[in-house]
Length: 175
Image 1 (cartoon, rainbow, N blue to C red):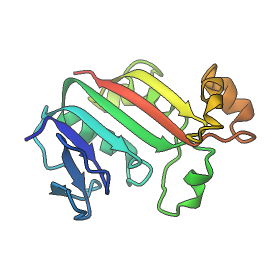
Image 2: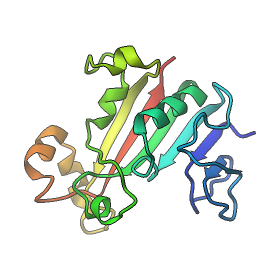
Image 3: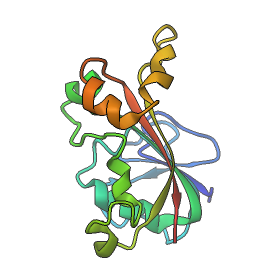
Image 4: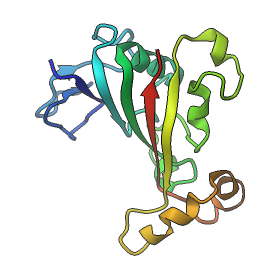
């Protein structure tokens, strides 16, 4: 079995990955409803997990992230893409259940917020990078660095006037 997991792959089938989805699209290796836990993998199986436009659809983000942590090896890299909270794409899809801001994943880094996750869960991730993508459009992507200069200021004062499209986060599993 590959050491990489493409969780909730949809039609984005990746070579060298276990492609898991709840539907049997062409190329899907494992059919599984992500909301059903535990996921069908042993502890410490994957060195890399890709979760691209999936977390906004799950019933419980915390439970899903706990499962990702469980099935990941120590030091595994988790790459996540989610619609940004002020994006039209976030609110126009009726299957989206959760909103994400640049600090959302702080909750999963033990000690960062000194909150109840520190005592209620074993999971721990180190945030390696978080990037707000204003646009993928070749003319508008020049603004991507601007919205990332100081993410809290952008989110507080400008996110609804100039809404970004996507939040990308890279985490490292800490065990």
